[in-house]
Image (spheres, rainbow, N blue to C red):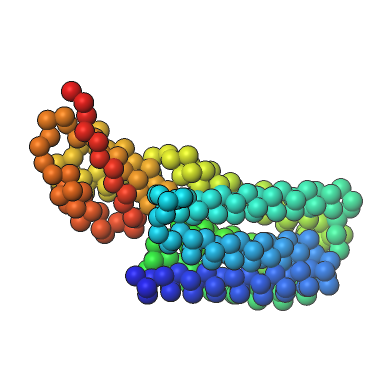
Length: 289
């Protein structure tokens, strides 16, 4: 257990440090060459840094035991943080989209494509390396926070790759007979990237809000749980489920004439669910005749 906690903390800490370095580099380089896309990359990394620090704090809070004030634990902190992440990233995408449209209407934006290519090349390699590491860490320690970090860095990796491709095209335009169009490369890339990537944080937010509203878990998880429960003689219609962060809340309805021992049944259920990447919280009620 302590090893898995240390692995999650290490992954989140690395994500925060990498986000800080990329934020500093992106904002400095973007201001130097006056590029909207690179400024967006830096601003996104700065937001990532703040959100990674928030994830580190949330990872500690989620593991706190239940108390009088929080009798069901602090599992809801995880989807709450993911929802905040999604909303903030959506806001960054919308602001960047508005800036790019304004730049287009003003006649484009001249950018030094060769300098931008240097930054984009380093950014692609760095972001991809962090994403691969987080993917590896998440495979070994299933965590909603790590999944959110992984998606965040996947977005940054693809963003950097798109910037690299776009500035490659801009550099080619500068050397060709269509050099007058090169000034539109930066805002056009920003519009395309913002419009495409806004879907990712929106999906993150919707999924997190569903958890906070105690919606049913994903079909895949529900199927795995029902398979495990069938081993102890429970039918799907006897079980209500809601996933909240790392916890799976389950209400099991037992027949009025059921004569078994509830604690023994609960122990059997926990044994059958121990391989799933969730912490079951089981509540039982006996139906009235």
